[in-house]
Amino acid sequence: MSKKIKRLRNFNAQLRSVNEKLKTEILHRQEAEDNLKAAYHRLSDIIEFLPDATFVIDKDKKVIAWNKAIEEMTGVKKEEMIGKGDYAYSVPFYGKLRPLLLDLLTVPQEEIEAQYSYVKREKDGLYAEVFVPRIYGGKGAFVWAKAAPLFDNYGQIMGVVESIRDITDRKEAEAILRQDKESFEAMNKIKTEQLLLVQKELTDAKHLSEIGSLAATVAHELRNPLAAIRTAAYNIGKKSRNSCLVSHLNNIEKKVIECDQTINNLLSYSRVKVSRFEEVKIHAILKECITSAQDRYYKWKVRVIKKCNCAKSDNIYADPFQMRELFNNLLNNAFESFPEKKGKLVIQVDGLGNPDSIVISFIDNGMGINPNDLEKLSHPFFTTKSKGTGLGLTICRQLVNLHEGSMNFKSEIGRGTEVKVTLPRERKLK
Amino acid sequence: MKKKILIVDDDEEICEEFSEILRGEHYLVETAYDGLKAGLMIGKGGYDLIILDLKLPGLSGFELLKMIRENKILSRVLILTGRPLLNKKALKELPGTNKEEEKILKLADGIVNKPFDIKYLLNKIKELIS
Image (cartoon, rainbow over all chains, first blue to last red; front, side, top):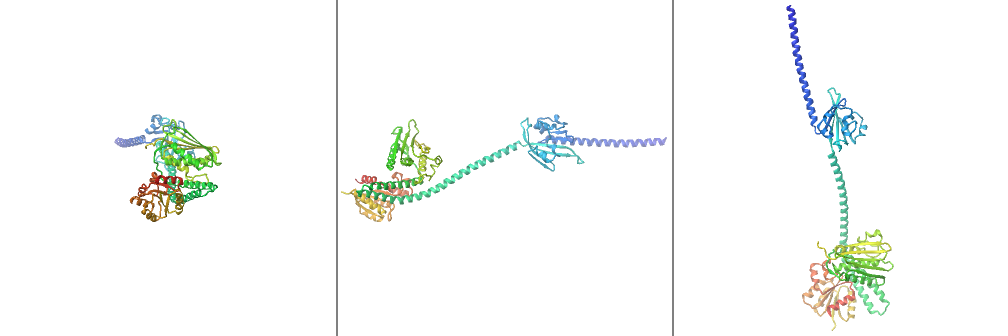
């Protein structure tokens, strides 16, 4: 009996001990479970508040995490997505069922590249850049996605996490930068062209100043002998009773004047121009110039017609010398346009009904100007004549510009040329 | 009484040809090819008109003109130059003239450019001394 009791007591003690152990064990387990739960919650919380849209699938490809940022990006709530499989997670992105980046972790590179504009495989996962059409309420956005596998303690894949970042802003910035770069390049190109132009002007200016000093010297050195020649010719004419000499002497006189004109052109082209404005009788000056041109070309059969559509007393503010120079040059050109030394030249002054400016047109029915040459007309030293400095029209353009007027050409080969000079009546105050 | 004219120009041919023209117009004409000789001649006086080139050996036309006016010599002075002068008014634009020369040039009675139109020049001379 006592033995039985002893055994029972023993057994009882054993049970109690086992019970104690069990209790401790349960406590441990509960503790572990609590820890696990806490860890899980911590992890969920971390995922939940990650700034990048993030979701996780388990190894059966069912969604086990869907954070706040991805809710905002897709407009799909966590409750609607958790536990879903069969690519359901792709619908908010693409509007259809299809694999996403995280499904491609084990797929070969080539197949992935077919779907993403940019994919890079690294040790810890996949990176991709792609346009996703359905997010942000259908607005779509460029995103940068990263997918990485999750492993358990034994190294087995237990799920995959994918994180998505909106890079639309960056893309836009890139586009702006690219645009800026392009417009900068375009601007640069324009500036370069302008620079080249300025450089050319500078070269021209240097050229000009050289011509200027050369011209001044040449002028002085040539004018003396010209004066002597002219005077001598006059004396021959006086002394000789031989009338056959007259035409030859006239020729000498004419050539002297031509030389002087060339010198004047060179000089006035190279001289720094300032206009001295005064009230000028433009009709009188024009008439004077026409007469002297007719004298210069007295042998030519050119009918000169002056038409006037304004009051003869119409005066304008201009530099009288420069006006003479302008008209002389234009008249010379008009006369030179008649290769047969005959033709018709109409000079028309229009001013009626225009209080601001008058227009003087020189219309010849001469040989006309080649369309290719029209734009080169005012270039210094451009000439189609076998003689001449090629400065006449350059000077005209300068003079017209000084008067803040304009000069336009209309021409047709074989039909003639019309030069239209518009001059303001008053000096505009700047 | 015949008017007396002095032509001062280092270009002998101009002097020669032009004095012949002036003689034909019944003027008394003398010539000088350099500034010094001209200065001496002018000093003696008696010229109604002095036709003066600007660029001269010895004394320049500017110096002669200044001298004429400072010594109150009663001759009219006509400048005859190959310099790019247009007329008195346009002087300021001319290269090769400084402020001092400009001032002197204003003392002249007229300026005519070479190669001159002879009839124009004869008229100008008539204007000055008849």
